[in-house]
Image (cartoon, rainbow over all chains, first blue to last red; front, side, top):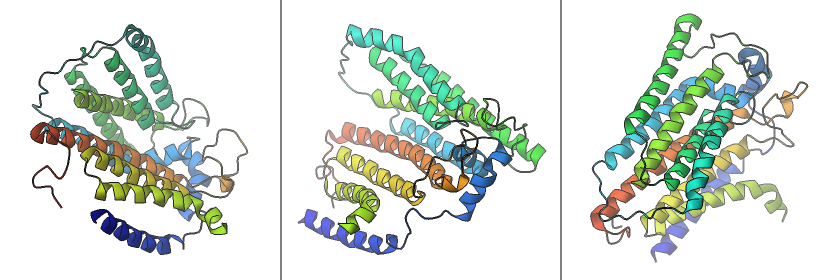
Length: 223
Length: 119
C-alpha cells in the first residue's frame, strides 16, 4: 500500500515537472553570460579551460564556499563518529598481491593526481578531481596495510594550510586588484603550463586540501 | 517513437531522479535510502549538463588555435555540477557516518525497527 501511494505521488510530481521542463529548448543557443565567458575568457584570465576559469575566477567565491562545505562535512563526520568503537573487530591481513600492489601503485597514483590538478587550467581536470585521485591512492594503501594509519594531525595541518593560503591569495587580490580573488599575477601565454595567473596556484591548493580531506573521510569511515 | 527520440536525455535524467526518490520513500534499509540519495543527485547533475548542451558542441577548452567559441557547450552548468559533485560527496559521507552511528546504537539498519523513525 505504502509503495503504491508513494509511486502515485511521485508520478504526479513528475508530470508537473514534465510540463515545466518541456518548455526548455534543448541544444539551442546559450545564455549571454556563457557567451561572454567563452568569447572573452581566454583574454581575461589566460586559462584555456573555460570551466576552470569560471570555477576559479568568475565564481571563485563560490568555490571558497564549496571548500567550506567539504570542510564542514569532514568535521561533521568526525563529530558524529567521535568515540565510536567497533567491538571484537578482526582485520584479515591482506594477500601478498594486494600488499605489494598497493606499495607499487601508491606513488604513481599520487603522481597522476598531482598531474591532474597542475594541468587543471589546460585540460579537463582540476583540484577537486586530482584531490579525489590522491584520496583513492590513500584508500589503496589502506587496503594494502589495514593496520597502518596516517597521522590525523598531519591531515588537519595540510588541509588548514590549503584553506588558509586560498583565502590569503584572495585577500591579496582584494588588496592589489580591487576585488576578492582578482587575478593579480601576469597571465602568461595561453596553453603553456605557467599561464592563467593565480588559477594554477589556487588549483594546487584546492587539490592538496581536497586530497587531505577525502583521505581523512576515508580513514574515518574505515575505522 | 519521435517523442522518445527527442526527449531521451530528459527521460534519462528524470528517470534517475524518479528511481532515487522512490528508493528514498519505499526502501526500509538505510543504506538503500542513501544509495537513492546518490541516484537523485546524479539525475540532477545530468539534467544540468543536458541544459548546457548545444547541437554538435565541443568541450569549452581552447586547446588549439582556431576553435570556434560559438560551437562550444555552456561552461556555467559544468562549473555548477563540479560544485554539486563535491557537495554530494560531503552529504554522502555525513549520511553514512550517521548510518554507522545508528547501527551501533540499534544493531539494525531497518527503519521500521528503529523507534522514532517510523512513518
